[in-house]
Image: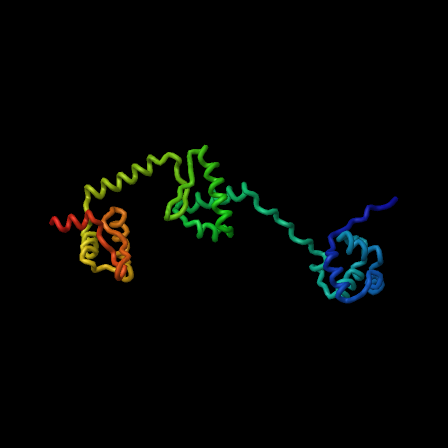
Length: 231
């Protein structure tokens, strides 16, 4: 009654490379290591090593070829399949859900290790998936994020900001910065950090614009200039 012989993985390509480097034949390798012709052929052509082979013969094979046990016997890591478009959609949706804030396309592409074409394709596909769920991809000059499909909340938020500005007016610090812009005392090249915050808020309120003339100075808008002249 014959017993079923067990086999384990053996790196046939690694053995073949070393045989070619040494300039010897399969038969010569079998003779030098006493491992047998059939065992050598199984390693080279089927990546198999019969467990009945003598340990001493296996070590002679390893030493003769200048290998270590891991190079001969460790199986290669599994090949990971390429990401599918659905995989891309899933990971992008998860990322946007985690970060929540606006992110530039360039930064997203770098983080995901994608090119911009792949990112924009996936953003378009994700937007189509989100809309039946009441969400959408929102894009503007500041970047990309996920938002509710119904933008009434966004419009209401903008109106709240306008009402706050109308009712509260300018804070003292913002008023000082606005007057400095009016008198041409602030340049885009030399702007303090605290002024940058105020200038951004003033720009959002339509009070200042980024100048492009001599010295790249900020300028007040026509309405603000008129208000200063009237007063």
